[in-house]
Image (cartoon, rainbow, N blue to C red; front, side, top):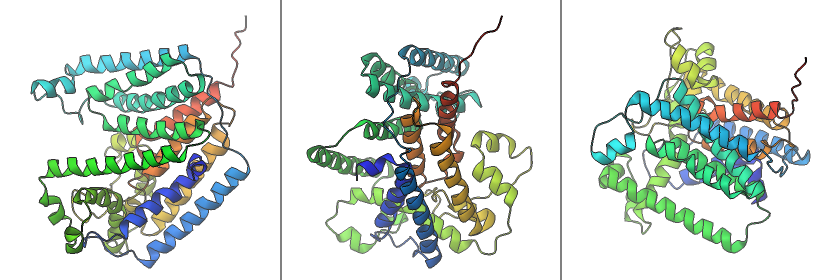
Length: 387
């Protein structure tokens, strides 16, 4: 099981299997019944991801290639990144964390940063966190560990949960790639820690929402409310299962949709840094999933594609995404590259988070893969100055 986590395509099977297992707990009467068409769709995607995952393992395209990137290069990259963040703080004239602590209104974290530049900085920040950690595990250079933690500071200063979440998740997958074996005792510790984190997630959720509100709005079943299961775990159920529920609801409510291939390609396949800035000027209408309730906002990687093309949307998106994943693993970043493990780990996170939304179009996430491909390409080139 532990070794399976090194293959990004198997992460698809694991992630959506967990989502379905949580869904069938039926702790909420709000969620619709999973349809036959949905079961057929995921059976096909599971079969394809499983077969290609086996092929990748058989061809030995996943290797423990130790990163030998020079520490100096990483430090210079971190310095350049922090320099541009410094410029953003100067331009905004505010540090959101400081304003929050002092009780000032300040700049909202959603509005912080220079347009376009901020998205690039966030994606590069996440990539650099991942590759710094990979190189640290390879070289055991403690200076790199200090740089690794330093790279989280900007995220804390302007409340970027995405950098924190992506950095930690990717680090877990990188650790799995470098680890020989995880002892049973340590596995139990990780399970206990995971359960504790999920419980605390529910505690914080109840504190923020005021308690019973969340259970009433999401129609928690009487059977669950009377059970001995700690109610804090309901939050995990809600957020892990709601994407499937919204996907199914979108399928149920979207009948005979007028097909929009342009919108599908533009909004479901291009990075948001393009679609958000050029969608309106080009007069390309954007469609959305059909939510069960307004604050449950996500619907897996597939739900929005239904609104553009009906069932053709998810099937087409699944094929296009799978082609991208295979191209990256097989051709874009060679297994001998310093960026091999970094790329596989970032890709694993993207595929895992597809249970919530289409992560390939999120600039802060997908651009990490672009950096891996670019740096892996140039590390194999030698430049000679001709006189």
